[in-house]
Length: 208
Image (cartoon, rainbow, N blue to C red; front, side, top):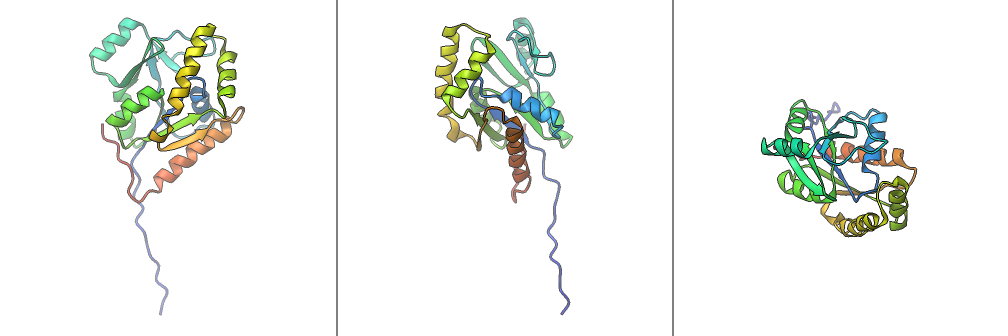
């Protein structure tokens, strides 16, 4: 009897919305910047914020830096998929940009705070939610102090908030420990998650 081959259909899996979150100072921006440098094939969504630009940040790459008035006008026009207030500053992500990229079949990578991720999970439950965690609270504090961007009382507020946010890890699909000087490993771990998601028998389908 001739050997028969069994053919499994492999349709192109739908594009994914990947949400990378975690406490302030855990390295969300650094991890995604490294993924850009390594030319991972994602559409990196740039968040709008009213926060002042830091010295090492670039407009349109790290964030879109807008005024309070501009942000309010965008919100009134219904432009945001998700928006949040973090430490007194507004953050919002463009719904149109996400929809357009997904429609082209391109996976969308976005980074938001833990509060925003909780909001987004209610709106888009089929997104992939990844939480980055520091190796320890000591390491997180050292990273925040290295920034030298805020007085001691604000740093303590961030550390307190981080402890509360890290307790939310069970609400995420995946957790990655973002170790010091290990951005390549973190980027590879995120890519491995996406590869696994693309192999699901019942793929996620994002509806906006």
